[in-house]
Image (cartoon, rainbow, N blue to C red; front, side):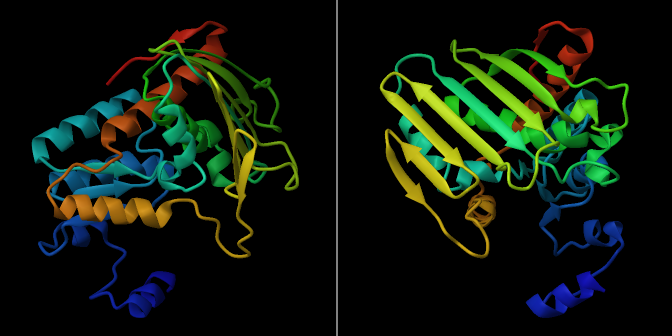
Length: 287
């Protein structure tokens, strides 16, 4: 009923619960996948094989094998895949990127994320289908790569104990990354805070630069702060990313965010979890 109401509201030609009907429609050029995490890879591959371009929400995939299958399918189909890493397009993150472009030496990035809603019986909390790390922390693996424009090469991580039901240990993690250009980054992801603990805070430091962004509400660069007091929706970059994706597809260009970026984020998260499991640093493989 919700899908039908949206179809009527926005003037869609039709709506359906049959994914194959969409894939078999020759008038459909692009598929947007916003299903549950464990379906993203298989639905992306099916769309590529049907000759469609794909915009898939994060995470693009949950395993290395799925990443490789998507890569192969995209190459064989000659179609593009983009992943919903919206922070790259938010006005609360783009100023940090603009400043870091000018650096001439390695930098330090620190990401602190608190997602108390991803807990209990909520489906996204289930590590069997990605949990909070593959499902959400992938945003910040991508974000650090994008801010630094340097590949993550190694990570060491620790989680809370995994032998209790709550809190889910694998969803509460602290990790340290090394990047190819000598930069370092840290990611603390937890699901235990309160709603008043603050959602996300990202700090970047380089020679002569200190910058911070918080909760899509404020960005501070060298003491100068820009804030947003929207009562409705924070400017998180969703609209800008979709507009960019569709414009570039129409112009025959690859999207800004590609399946390579989706794979990097998934592989980085898998490496974090492997490090936490083995108590050893893990090399981050490339696709």
